[in-house]
Length: 331
Ligand code: HEM
Image (cartoon, rainbow, N blue to C red; front, side):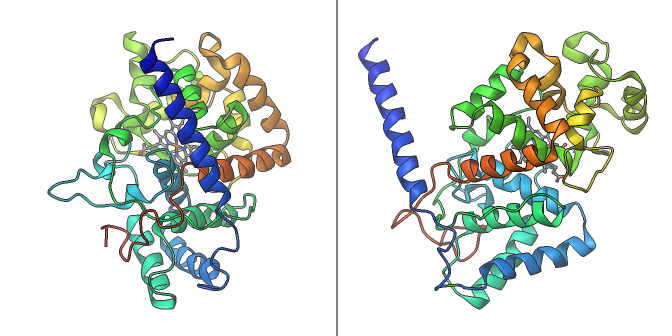
């Protein structure tokens, strides 16, 4: 192996080891003394927001994913644009799509009132994800806490967030590179049991799949007709119309997402590919889809485990980073 490659491998191993060491510094009781009501405060603000906007639970869950996959779970996603720094919010996967930022502001304001300068924005996203899943009827897990906030956004990193157009083996690799195996991957995709996708996220599947000028052959015909009605070709590629990611129980966190895939009713190409893309390593993910479709308990168990693993991606701890006063800007 050339020296550069060896050095690179060593650096990656060292970084992974450091991430592991830092993750072990996180603990569920991190704020027990410094901000004892942190969980209830976050939950109250989310409950209030949910009364006006039931979709907010899904939107908050997604923010934690988009935060952790770029520079680790460091709140970098929340930073607004400055003259010298591009915001991750401007990246393709987030612009016009990632939502819930004002609710994160409300949570931060409530926590700054209760315990100023104590709870990080990265931890707010981790707590908000768990609380949102629970409020939607999903599993409960003890959220590891003690992350600190990063000092910079990483726009380029956000540009390579997983895309529904990525082939399945690229997607599983993006997860594996962050320590998330195929079971974690399939379980985390189950987050699409709640929330919405814009027509522009599925337009290619409906009208021109992989440049064939035909719909995606893995999409159920009756469901294709329904989706085409909601997302007319005439609206073009920037249609912001919304589709339930789980058309059976759109706002309930359950395992029907996997049964939908078994009926060829996965909404995003990347949802359906886990079962229907044998040439892209679905032989590994397909059986896991089947297992979760037949056992909600196994899905919930694997989802909780995978969320904790995702939340452990390269956290900043100790004296690294800072605790932002305002999640949108460094102090
Ligand atoms: C292969 C990986 C993934 C891809 C390609 C993907 C892609 C997408 C896309 C395209 C949307 C719709 C965006 C829009 O049209 O505005 C979406 C929505 C969503 N994603 Fe994913 N996603 C992935 C994994 C995840 C993971 C790991 C989670 C959380 C653990 C997650 C949670 C959500 C949620 C809850 C929504 C709905 C958000 C809302 O309604 O505001 N996704 N995802």
